[in-house]
Amino acid sequence: MSEAVTVRILDRDYLVGCKPEDRDGLISAAAYLDGKLRELREHNRSGGLERIAVLAGLNVAHELLGLKQQQSSRGEQLAQHLQALKSKLEAGLPSSLQ
Image (cartoon, rainbow, N blue to C red; front, side, top):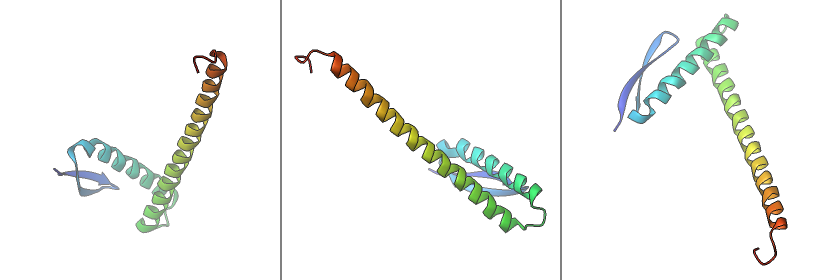
């Protein structure tokens, strides 16, 4: 079941449908986007709303891709670490237990 949630971005209200369990995340995302847009608007007084929205979208996408890359790298490091631990454990066990 979907519910309507009002979010405020750059002093404008938007009615957005979402699942009840996604409500808090939607409100947080709207607040984050609002902050990014306001930050860009302060630094780009000559830019129109469309330009500011595109720049905010690019910044958020860049952040997301950076976080995904970090997560992937950490996952690979963890897998390597676990493999090293497994090798050490196997080396220390008698061959009859392996």
